Image (cartoon, rainbow, N blue to C red; front, side, top):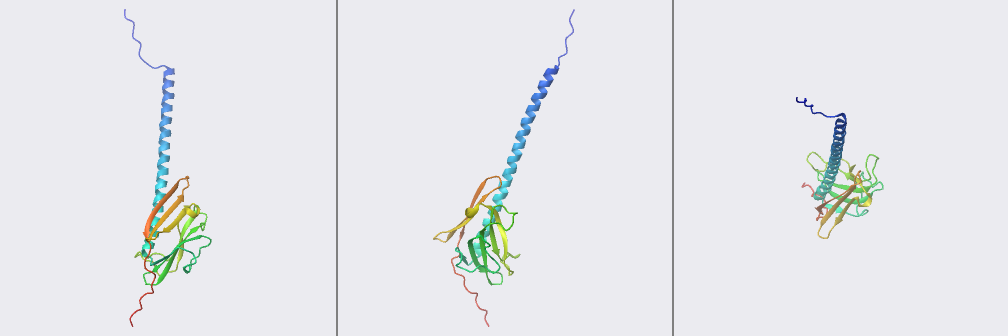
Length: 201
């Protein structure tokens, strides 16, 4: 007489071991996912900071291309009306013309931020705003923070060369401890600023 076969199954110990192993695997997978999300977040912040730096350098480069004269030393030209260094270091000053042909100046300075919402030192621009046509407007000069998170004096430098090429270098200290360095080159204005031609009678 044949004995009845026993049904295959799991004991309570086997089920507990399986559950523990599944929990460990799930915890490791979750930890990897969280780490990846943090890495993606850091990468996204770093890319945004790089884009902000590129925009700042492009603005300075564009204003250099628009300018007719450039001053690299404080005291060589009077500060633009309505602008002051306010304890910041002089970086450069540009002279050009607005849409009406009037002589205007743009001052760039580097130093302490005007308020606590900014990180570290800032690069300030004081000068006319831009009109809808992309030209300097006829309004009065205004001071604006161009970029923040500069680590002191080396945060933004403009280095001229004998060939007339200017090297623009921006260094920033980000919140997570990373340091970014970005560079642009621009041509210095070659012609001195001249008086506008007089209107014929």
